[in-house]
Image (cartoon, rainbow, N blue to C red; front, side, top):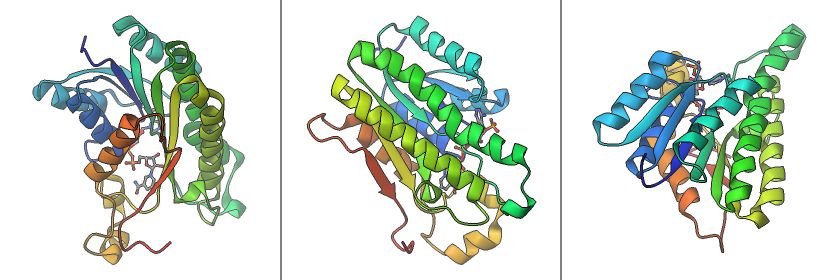
Length: 244
Ligand SMILES: NC(=O)c1ccc[n+]([C@@H]2O[C@H](COP(=O)([O-])OP(=O)(O)OC[C@H]3O[C@@H](n4cnc5c(N)ncnc54)[C@H](OP(=O)(O)O)[C@@H]3O)[C@@H](O)[C@H]2O)c1
């Protein structure tokens, strides 16, 4: 077990994705990282990279929308280092385009389950431990859609707005009890695997038009390291030339 305590990252996918990059950053900072995602090969690859550079990490196959999975994930953290849950990042997201006229109920509900309900489950389990410790940081990954509903991203926007509300509620409830809760609005495209499927979009953004994964991970770490006399609750990040 690492001296630095435990970090849990939920929503870990490909190497060039934010979840994976957060794991690697937190591992470099000396935390034992629990990398949670649905695809075993992906989370094991993240863990292998952290270990290869001398860090400590464990892959925990988790569907973040299943309460039993999330409870089990946090019990793993308890078993590893009781009272040492330092940092939780909820990063799962599933943006997909669909007009409401074409949208069946299951699409809307599934989007909400991943991007909002799963965030509540993660936040609740984190808070149950961190309130008792009187210490810890919970970070939620938001998007432009967290602040603005617009077609064809309506389901995603509704879910991300809900997640933002979960984060605000937690910050107001548990901040005074020592738990730092922050919501990070990623206001632009991330230079990662997901956008590789949208080559035209990436080309149109041009040089420096996307957010760099390491730069985002730096911002998450900075939030965790803030002294409690000056905590940020909401941070927005965008490339210098993104219109807003
Ligand atoms: N990509 C962008 O341009 C962009 C822009 C603004 C905001 N964001 C936000 O940034 C965050 C990360 O986005 P990203 O594109 O970089 O993705 P990422 O971190 O590479 O991937 C997140 C991973 O979460 C996993 N996941 C999805 N549903 C899950 C579930 N039910 N349980 C557990 N894990 C689940 C998926 O991996 P598996 O399928 O392997 O489980 C997915 O690859 C998201 O919250 C997203 O909304 C992204």
